[in-house]
Amino acid sequence: MKLLSIGFFISIANGVLELVQIMSWQFTFYVEALAKNKEYIKDLYEFFSLDETEGAIDKPSSNYMEFEYLEFKNVSFKYPNTKNYILKNLSFIIEKGGHYAFVGGNGAGKTTITKLITGLYDNFEGEILINGKEIRKYKQCELKSLCAVVYQDFAKYFISFKDNIALGDVNNMERDDVEDKIKSSMNIMNLNDVAQKLSHGLETQLGKIKGNGTDLSEGQWQRIGMARAINNNAPIRILDEPTAALDPISESNMYEHFEEISKGGTTIFISHRLGSIKLASKIFVIGNGTIIEEGSHEKLMNCRGVYADMYESQRSWYL
Image (cartoon, rainbow, N blue to C red):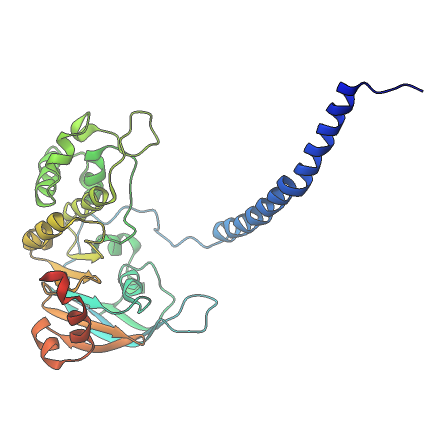
């Protein structure tokens, strides 16, 4: 009978203990990761099986629509596989040249309205009319040219600083005067100092994909998103929480340049900061999936209703 040496015995014991650890902790971790990734794969397969909307990858039409009015007529909407309606029999009119705002609590459906306006959702009940024509009868390229949108989860493109803004007018990125337009948008959003501090100015690669890329703060990214929308010639500008990541100075600067941002077009604001909502000529207060109050800031304050209560709760922010 052969005997084990002390060293060999210790090696075997350590191996058994490591195997126990793998089986008890790491094995459990891998099983959990496998189950989680299986669900991700399921979502990925569902995504790949979706029907592609005709014209989904087309560029915006180079012939901008002559916008006159937008009307929601008894629009109801609920997300797939859910029972509760986010919007229920919602009706309102947006007219050319007006500045409008939607306010309401979290989950009231404000951002959903903007996604219906831009044609991202088309499984709604009722009618959405643009210049009297049902929105689902427009081509995707026409809808893309109708609105310039800055969502609260704004896009961060890991390309050059200049191209991040130029993308707002994707059809004219190669024009000779594109840099003049970019600089004009940068002036409005006070981005000149940001660009000057970058290693290669407007040509600096943003993000961390490339080795020489430079990342920015959330507020700076949001200002770039705003500049991108300003660079767009669409007749409607939709600003969803446009100051959420901005510092007070940048926020004040945006209000001061509001007329330049709107370019005389139609503007739709969504914000929880009611100080910015005062810029709107008409405010829609959303509750229970429909409009419960509407009017100017002064009118709604005099009504002493939901909007007035919301504004009073934030009054100390503006003192």
